[in-house]
Length: 328
Image (cartoon, rainbow, N blue to C red; front, side, top):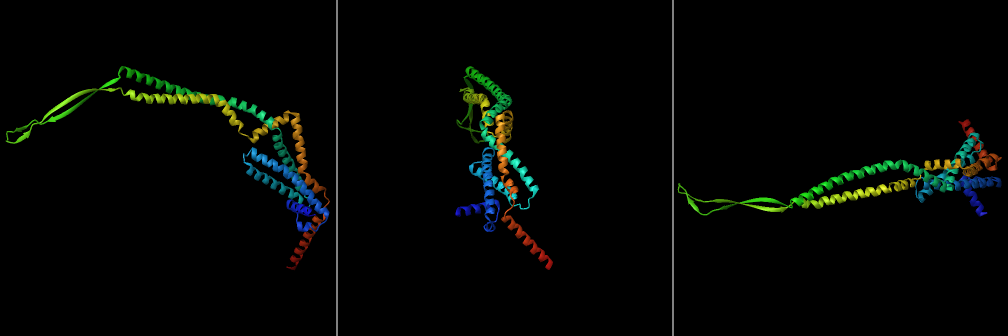
């Protein structure tokens, strides 16, 4: 009995029923709540899984945030079902709206579930489409790399010519002459001038010497060798990248799980294989009728004393408001 009471409380929380009122109602009303709760829980389990899968696979969210998205899906489902359960006036337009929503949700749910079931088939179809995409992108990417390699070849050829000229100059002129001159002053003695004054005699001499220094290109040679090695390394890297372009493009496209791309592939698989279409149809029918469980249960119900109690309270409240207006 205690578990049954907890289940009814939980059912009231899910369906929006008022537990204090329901606790004084008949077993028929309590069974209606249990029935609605069971139907909603089935829908919640399905849409919780669908929401988690969608968030994790296509929104690239981690497990924690995927659970949050799953809970959001569940809350939306509960609010939709409450529109039907808490409607005591048999609103046909509301029922029709729920019917349309059930079709849309069954289609979406069947698509997501089929993407899980036909995952391997979608991957195979995706590989074929990726090969076609790579073949269309590869020439453009390759041409860019080839132009860069040609540019490196031109620079390398210019540097090789410059290096050869430097080597030839070093071979022909290993040393260069350098002339330097040094001026010296010498005072040999004192000279008496005509005015009777003495002055110092200065003798200036200039020494000129020639020196041989190594050719400056010898010092520049290691630098140009380093530049040539750098260009060769860059050219080699571009050549290696050219060989890996196809694999890298393919890996990049494989890592992108576009919902619309996979949806197109799934549609092509479903409508090109009778077995795949049959499985999708089964899931659609199953999800549609699961979505319709609450609506069918509500429309086939002849009512219960919980609804009668709610309607009675409404009538009493209306009469009280009417009398209040009359007294004013």
